[in-house]
Amino acid sequence: MAENLFGQFYETRTLRPYENVDAVQTVMEELALVYGETDPTTSGATTSIEAAQYVNSIPELLWPPREEDEGKSEQEIWGSFHRRLKASVKKTGVETDDVLVIITASTPYLRIAETLWTGTLDQFRSDSKNDDQIVLLLDKEPRPGPFQTPQGGCRIEVAVILAKQLRRASGRPWRKGTWLGRAIFKVGTTKGGIGFTPKPMDDELRDHFNLPRGTLRYVDLPGTLDPSEGIFEIDCYIDIDLLNDVQNNQKTDGALAFQYQIAIDVTRSLVSKANRELADRAEVDSPSEISDSLCARLIEAAARTEKRERDHDREQTLFNYIKTEPERFLACDEARLTKLKSIIQKSMRSD
Image (cartoon, rainbow, N blue to C red; front, side):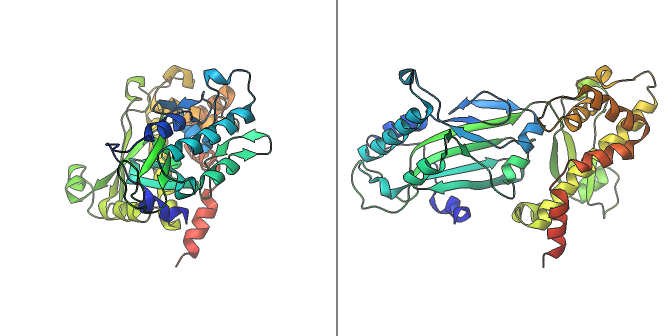
């Protein structure tokens, strides 16, 4: 049901020709988001996290205290929010049973947009309380596409919308899908880890790179050891027809498996080039000597612990692998992709 609601209910409006919708907006802007090891982000703000956290952490919707909430418990603040949200909706002339809360995530990378959660105001209240914990986890299986694309970042939106068409009345929202209030959070990634941008490849590009006409993938890398080039994303060119198929079938097992394969190809290309460049720079003995380079960023991301903490000893080990045993590094890196096996198995069983 939730997957269909995105296109059915959601709309973007710049004009607000309705009475008292500002009250709903004011309440919704009290929401906050935590994604990874960061402080809560307020509505309208942008936060940056490391790429490794981006693809592994679960975003959480929170109800932080206002100035007037000093001395109140977390549950009192949460209860007050939901009472005021219902009251603000009623001020618009709309019954609370006629609205839904819809939470979506979108990213410009591969033009992915997904509905994460949807429900009534009462469900929004009940689902955000787990025993004594006040939080709404924005997760589901498989992991939403926008949360798998650190190179594109994402926009998370929590909106109160009309669930059905109402009788048209002056100053009152009436059209199905109209939003009464919303909170918007933007998440980007820092230079932790590596980023790559899939780009369509046609015959003209194949000729430009002097590639055979049957080439399906090609990775164009800057220098891997130079810190000044570590700020650049990697260009990963994909056959234009295959890339269109991925975009049009994002949630299929085959598309997911192919996206994992692209990421593995990028890593393999980077490791191979770093190995060749290190062979010409025998004086480089540790990742700290190439800090902020593409190679160092890859090593830092691959060496993090399960709690996403840096492990300098592990970083040195992985650096040595790239320098002397690149295939061993690739084996270790692939082992971190815990969902890869099941995705490949599902893709092979698909009709």
